[in-house]
Length: 233
Image 1 (cartoon, rainbow, N blue to C red):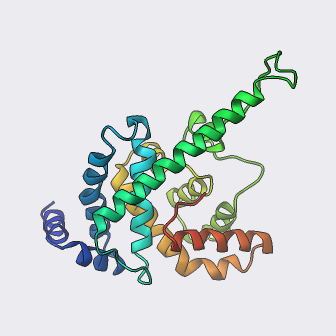
Image 2: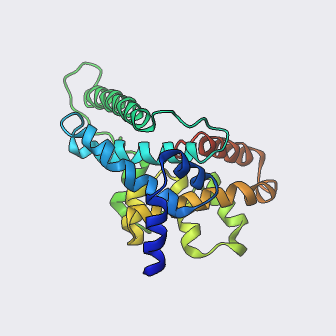
């Protein structure tokens, strides 16, 4: 506990640029401080502007995305990091609103036959929503994702929890949902996923080479998204 307090005080004393430098050096305490430092800033902006039910989807996604992006040494650190985060949140909220509006129109169109008179029932649930409704162990699919196939190839050096993480990440399960399934805090889970992505970037190529070409291409796209700081989709 004392060592934890020392580390928390250490990263809390860093200015924003130094904090990002520590993240780039692989300091997981710095990553946790990034989330703790800027989440209140985004929640304050979101208050009264973004519906509370979208806070997790918008605020947490932006924090994860920007943290991963800044962890890449090739990324230029914004001169006004707080303003940059607020701008990213605003864009994220607009994108979520547009996406939900499109889904709503699609659902309304799908609710009627061509003549507009007979209601029909169609399943339009997102895969991640279905997985969440079925629980943490619902990862059995006849079509394994690229990350699941990578996990199978690396099984000899991965523990069960890491394999589950790869399965859920590959199926676009939100970090907050994964935290609930693991019984851990959101902060701890996000740091764990961050470390796993960095580990995979180093170790995955040799294993990916043993997989089919289409799986290799999907893994390449996944790691490009990680580099850009975007969540796997």
